[in-house]
Image 1: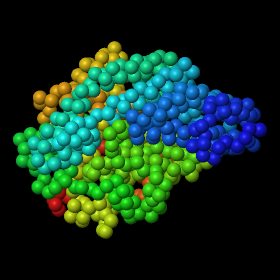
Image 2 (image 1 turned 60 degrees about the horizontal axis):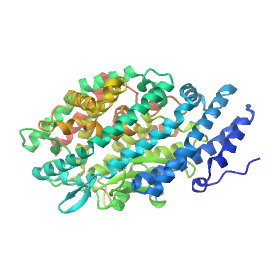
Image 3 (image 1 turned 45 degrees about the horizontal axis):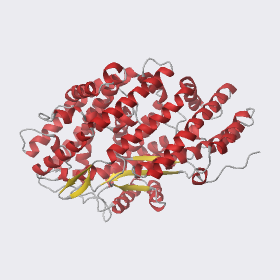
Image 4 (image 1 turned 90 degrees about the horizontal axis):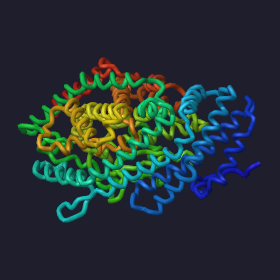
Length: 570
């Protein structure tokens, strides 16, 4: 009998593979039966949770400071010495459970996913998957090092976005061009990294006997409830229903600003009306957290308690600084049964949307952590993003409550207008990102060359993103694919946002009619984890997983109607 596993992931992080392996071996050698399968799954979950949390903590460390050599060494040591061994051992346990013919209660969908993983698994891919994660960290290092000198001081590009909120157009243009110049300086480095990642992914697919990396990634991401054709249909629906609406939105903005044409530096504005100053949103990151908690308490006291736990237990890293990886995320510490939120706040109203979004992920984690087995808690990214995007909309009516609201009652509609405009602008951009990747991974001979990627991105940009004049900025426009981290670090992970936004708008629509019931459905769906199919998760939340123009058009009309009513009042 082996000694009990450590109670904390921090203690477990000191273990070598030699110390971990016997626990997998014991699980592998046990004879499974209906009488002991629950205990066996509990033990497997405990081991999986420890390993998952160790990886999450190591990843947090290297994203908070991409220049920390000690954190990078620990992360790489895990990837080299632990990660591939765990992947192989974990797969053996999945195959053991499948071979047993047992189906524990609540395991129909997890077993379905395990069958797909068993079909895809190849031992020769393990070192390649490790290398892929290392190369993804290289992308973070490149982006995290991007700074410029603005008014005599070094500043990150994220911090420079504050200047792009200025009413003075010449200041916005100067800041935008400075950021673009710095990004283009890394063009060759990112091109070279793309080549390495692209070739590695081609080999992953080839080893697994897949026709191309898209087919490989589809199964790796466990996209079992929708097809490639569904995504292509969604792209067409966006072109039909959203692109005209977004173009109308850009035209309204052009007229409000009194311009003959919109340029890229006119887009990063949360200004409405234009003669008012930018929405500040909050003071510092502590103020951001305090006000976010107050908003969540008004949505639901339990959600407020969840967020207070994050604050009280130091599970937030919100500020931006040099060397910090780009973007925002919420990760899970399953042993602790806590989420952790990472973002790059710089004092913008957009940061308010981000904290609402990542907190939706955090609430999802709190709810699904109640499920007993690790294998039951994985909902799929397509619904995980419903949790976050719906929270943006569910919390938006509560941002102006005084004395601790983000905005005054007069300013709050400006935030909501900017938010709804952001929804319209996002779907076409998402279609560009998704369509680019469908092309890249089914046209390997072309996409390995960065210049062809530039040309394809520009073609898609012009197809889905009319209304903004990029003349004279062709280099900046065509290299947009370099600046979308998902393309490099999490390929094909982007259509989830578009599908989830459609689901979130449906949840929001329900809340406009019956807020209490909509919230109950939302939380019920979060608590299901991965125990039901993706369409069933949407249904539980009061929505429908959809790719068609009719459903998307209904959502677009709701957004446009709401925008018109708020702008009329303003």
